[in-house]
Length: 170
DNA sequence: CTGAGGATCCTG
DNA sequence: AGGATCCTCAGC
Image (cartoon, rainbow, N blue to C red; front, top):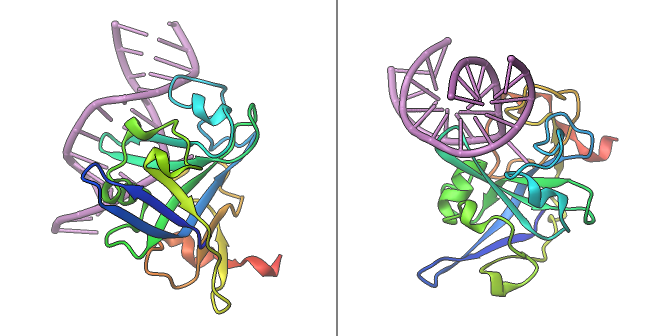
């Protein structure tokens, strides 16, 4: 949260969006694409951290994730919202704004050379991190594994927001 | 081979 | 609340 997702577009333009909303997909998590084992689509989730996982859904949208844990442990973070970029609230809109498709799945995002990378950032002192159930899933709704910066314009407006509470009230 | 459902988004 | 639109995967 607060880091910058950076993308060099095919025309050379660089866009930087501040990450303000994410969801975690865990080992043993029935809502995770990796839950039923490796497939052609999800195989990069089973690889090392710092790699993009992008999938196509609903016949028209792409969603961008970052693989997070060690090789062989299939976890990822879905990036759901960015500030500082127009029309980048929502995972499908992020991929549209940054021109990301499954072509960019499986690439190393720890280097600028890939054209897709993350730069360091942290939340500001006056920002509150909220947690809520994840959006758009039909199982494992009991887990508060969605995180967002309260009040940021890049955060999705959704019914789950009314269930949100501050992270530091754990 | 088939069918159901989907980590979404827009409109009304 | 419903539709767009098609890929993926489980099941047979």
